[in-house]
Image (cartoon, rainbow, N blue to C red):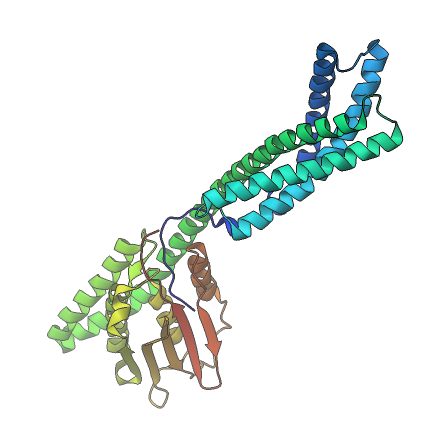
Length: 368
């Protein structure tokens, strides 16, 4: 797994499959309309220039229907190779980095496809009903016309793809924004659970009588926890250093409550301090470890955070609570969703016989 570089870029065109983006039924309908308009123009132009002599309205209609049918066949024959060309070019010569090569290759491929289809259609039409004009002239004219038409067709397909992709990306961005706001709300709601505040206040009440200095320290860390939650809930990413500082405050409160039965250690390389993760990621994992394990004499909970490869790793031993209800997995799903919405690899959760390990992917930059 490599670090992710979060910077605003164009959509990776090499991943675009035009067959999946374009609505084919609408495209075929558009082709039928295009074929009809094209034949109206061609027949009228040929009649005006004297290239053909349309004797009456019936002959005009017959030529129009016949020509439209052939043009529709030709348009469909053009469409599929053109889409294949676009798909291949998207993979190897995308618009974002190889514009000149893309234009040259697409121009040549468009003309070649147009000429081949024109030859096929002309030979087919000639086999059905011999042309009155010399076949060579008809073949040349048709090849020229279809090549030009195919260039216009290819431009239209590319424009349609960009427009459709833009609309899809706008919809996706709007959906992700709604999902992210919902996830933020769920995270905030989870972090401000009444039982956490109630337990913390109970601990503080006992400390005030027993150890005022410890009580003051507890109040400071307690305030830090809630300040962090409120300050970062609107941010997509937070530095690992800040998240670890928050985790230290959170675990201080828990260690005051559980005493020596809760061990917490951090061994993270300095280079990781400049990397990023979504805020409150560690809190979700740490809370789950405390929530689902016995913490008492004879059942110590050891929680360790360390760096490995490109991940923050949170590991704890297992002393499952006998009375604890089955985990709903909401915390895990929430984390996976938040990472997915950022385009990052999802966290990995591994349950072993004697330990539970979570791998949190690190993000190299916060630019998004």
